[in-house]
Image 1 (cartoon, rainbow, N blue to C red):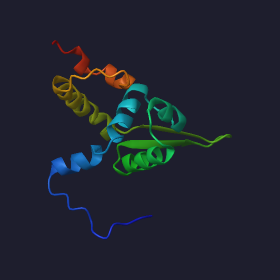
Image 2 (cartoon, rainbow, N blue to C red):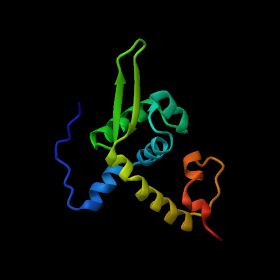
Image 3 (tube, rainbow, N blue to C red):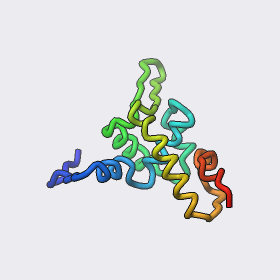
Length: 128
């Protein structure tokens, strides 16, 4: 496994939060799991638009390392694995909804490719 030469120097809680939620896919995966509960890898992949298998696998590992999601392995034939939010992951959902609501006030573009989970977010309830 790759190890950086220098340790990350996180100096404040905001930096930590941005490192946990940072990137294009992490918040989307959290929202998908928040709406659907536990999902298999293939179901997460279906819910996510335009993500490669390598990026999805790496992002799931990062979220597991940050204790945002957990991996449940069932010992049966064929093997089955499901991913779900931890308590820490569930605690982040209101934060992401608040960001979504704030963003909706400033990002006015209607996009037909908006994720189903985002279409249910409070930002669509705004009055213009």
